[in-house]
Length: 163
Image (cartoon, rainbow, N blue to C red; front, side, top):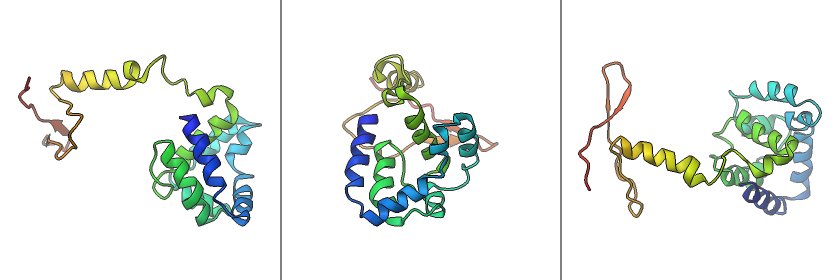
């Protein structure tokens, strides 16, 4: 994932005009990401307070430009598997960036002990299949079936298993 992030960041920064690059520097200089290099705990406290604001709103309030969001930050967010910067919280984006800035091993993203198929998607798939779910990998999803309990909770439907 870091390689995707790094590739996206280097490509899109070449797409920015010098003015937008300068405004990026101005916006990010006082950010918690820079503070994380000196005071990681303090930076994370600051970042936690940014959950109620979108990354775009935060970035623009610090002097960043809409062009930087469109040409750099949205592609970076998409490369990391997120949604666009108008709809993701500043906390999420800045947490990831501060980890990349402060942890030398963050580029490896060792969130799993091994293969994602064995440690991430494998257990999720097994859980879904144990509950009666099926995977049809060549079909798009046309409908998600569910019921609601009297208190409003979502319940899965008990569907017959096809073999």
